[in-house]
Image (tube, rainbow, N blue to C red; front, side, top):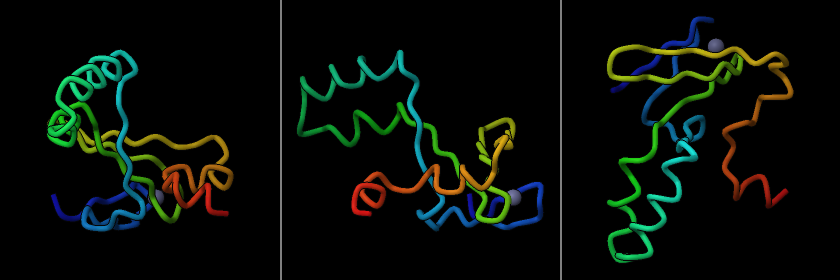
Length: 95
Ligand SMILES: [Zn+2]
């Protein structure tokens, strides 16, 4: 995918994991977990198709979804309090 541009002009790199996260629909979560429990050795490959990647702009903190047919961008009501929304869970718990 390469480079992704936010509407503020910031360029995000698909190669940087720092501002990238994945989301799963709640209705898919149980189905995914049933498959993983049945075949735990294949957990990574079973889970991967359920997730959609998205990015958070470092500058304005908008959320950007790059879909096959469109790029969707969402602006937080309070950008500063949303700044680390996609920060890794492990980083959040180590503070
Ligand atoms: Zn931005």
